[in-house]
Image: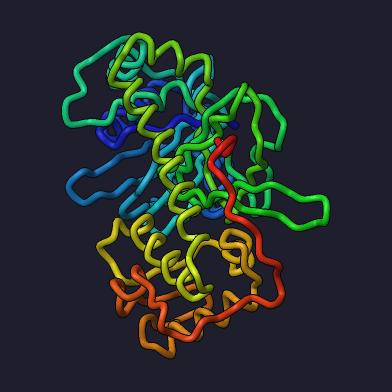
Length: 356
């Protein structure tokens, strides 16, 4: 179902308006079902109201005989239609989803929503905020399972996409059954620009529960013509994609597999933790990493082991890695023992032509 992301500044007001609307209806119409990570916690019981406490950062759902509290909510999506709000989804700090479905839609009037819609329809003063934050009102959300296709190669470009949570891979399937991954998209990354109105690669979700925001291209183009701030932000999003592709091309030109894997880890830390942390939890598998770096899975595993022996990294789990010497990983060392890849034939680095 299409969901709209609710800005955090609107959580308290929106909750109050919803509770007020519920109070004005008969008790027989105020029933709801609650599920936590798809496990039913309550089914069609009276809904008394919802509140958000800013000071404690708590979102509370009051049902008859049950008070459900979501601590430190990260994101809230609302399911809105012509008849009103039919439900909402709260994602907490651990990524758990708390879904509330109403038996009957509730019509509410929200000043915050009206303000946002006015902001999308024309230029506005967005000092201190990214103009793309105002585009949530024209987007829809799609939740994907692991391996689910988001769009396929040669399909028409109708939307631009952005990763909300989870991860996705962009690749080309070859006639011999192998694939070449040209991009690994993480939360905040835009993709799906295409060339000549067509997609030249297939995109799939990497993790279960990956949430993708879809932005209609025609609407984005109209907004960009009206607002130079939005046009600049959209250009920056496209430029970020080209920057990732250029970084991949340069990394593929490195001499050894160990250097490629080390540089890949440094870039993942920068993208996942903003470069401020040394602990890394990789969302993708070693097979994905191998297809991304044009290596075999065995070579990737041997490279990680070698980096561990050199005390540049520490492997704390299957996908958990702690960076011990970031500068050495980023620079690489031609004098170190080279790990060659006998299981995969060498391929020339891909070019940036047509990669969007």
